[in-house]
Length: 135
Image 1: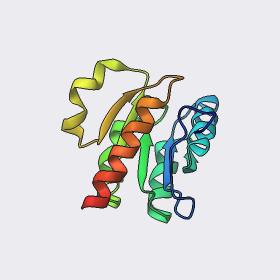
Image 2: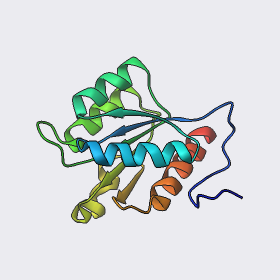
Image 3: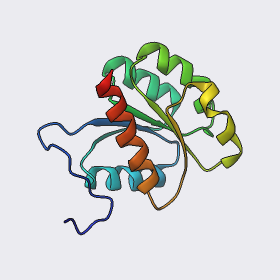
C-alpha cells in the first residue's frame, strides 16, 4: 500500500502519457507532481495553442484541459484537439462549476472541478483510459 492515497497500481513499463493544459504555472506543477506520483507520464502545455501543437507532435492517451485561459479558451480548442486525435479522451478540469451541465455536448469525456484533492481527476483519467482500451 502506498503512502500516498492517490497512488494507483500502474504497469511501470507503460506509464500512460497525459497532456495537462493549464495557464497557471503553480496549478500545472502541482497537478504534474501529483499525477506523476500516481504513476503517469505528464507533459505540460501552458496554452491551448501549445496543447494543439503537442497533440499534433505526439498524441497523449488523455488530455486534461482547463477552460478559462487567456487568448484562446479551452472550449474553443476542444474540437480541434478532438479532430486531431479523435480517440484521445479530453477531461475538462476547471474551477468553474457553471459549465458542468454542458460538458457532454462538447464531447468531453468528463468534467472535474479543480481541487487540491485529485482523487476525482484520477478516477476520471482511469475511466477514460479503460474506456479507450475497450475501443
